[in-house]
Image (cartoon, rainbow, N blue to C red):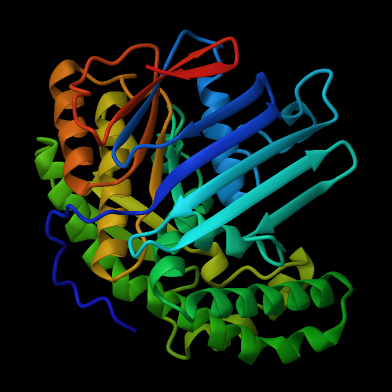
Length: 371
């Protein structure tokens, strides 16, 4: 494992970009074709114009699923037979990938560079992205699942073994849970293997968390947030257990058999976000929570850059919401300093777009035109 914790300088590197985007018959978007700038790509227009749908199409291309809801039928524009999404990505070294997705009434076809997708993780490698919406405060306020996924995203993009270990853990967990539900005593045979994979996952998380915490603190300071941040990981089993996870699994066999699932392991881990020692959702206003969200995502991008990974394209829906003019200016400057390609939706946003790295697109009634 790496994660030396040396810090990440401000960068002007050319990061991952969505260089070209084509969308056909996706929600209210009938036919969209545009080329992205390296910096800010502003999607401006009234409510219901199609701005969020455009961000959603990009998200689907990078994740294989929507951030709005699981039902895919609304993806297809009324009267159309299928929805098409195409993204050409360009990495730091000039490497390009072509991601194409076709969603019909009966199923979905996804290709990367002309080859049919085998694993959804291939999408994440070809088109790494992160999304911030007005609901992103749920990362702080709601259950631990979202925070686990946030934590693991960075590891996926910089630690080559992490994805395989994670898959092995999930497969072992699934097998143990199936045996538990069937009251099949062979579930005991999975304890050692599950514990081995689980403790490796936990070591990955514990090793990189201090670096992430420090990078997020840097972002908070740049956004003029004056408090002490602590990111604390609860591994998903009693930390004082002398024999490690395998002994916990053995001790809980009776409980797990009754419940029909495994009650200990990194799938039950919790990432606590503390502000001055207090749970962040209890300490911060909604506007402060939003700034913390941006700091978390920028810190995560900084971590990936520092470890030689490909930083994400950042999708931001309704950026000005709940931010005053001062903090909006600070945030825009910080995003520009990081050099990330950003796709930003807003009803209106008054920023200096004279830079050749920035582009402005007007969205109206599902049509997109470059200003």
